[in-house]
Length: 164
Image (spheres, helix red, strand yellow):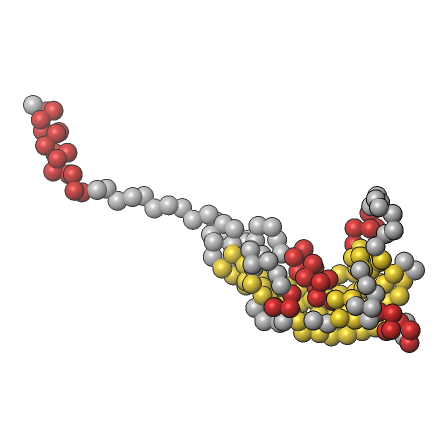
């Protein structure tokens, strides 16, 4: 897993860029979400910001999902570009969030920033709650059951008895 020491990186430079291929087992996605098909390509640019770090993250990969209507497995392209703020955990026990705080990822340790955690979160957020294999996918209809012919002779007998 790519682990970055942000303190060391930003002692010598104002901007960091990197390209990583992260294996599916390194991301440890929940199995009910879907299955990654191959490594996830991650391009990252990190800049120092007044309250922490600004991360420009580009993710590309494929995930196998199950259609929520017809239950057919299908492959969805993961292509996501996000800008996220990395900040230290707030020191106050409770804080109120503002609109600009919704795109914040809190750092536990600047010296051991695990990029895979951020990528995992972005993949989970990019998978739809009700995935569809096609926009026009319909719920399968049940076929009409065939008439049971085992009792047809008995039905005829009852009908002839009633007609007498």
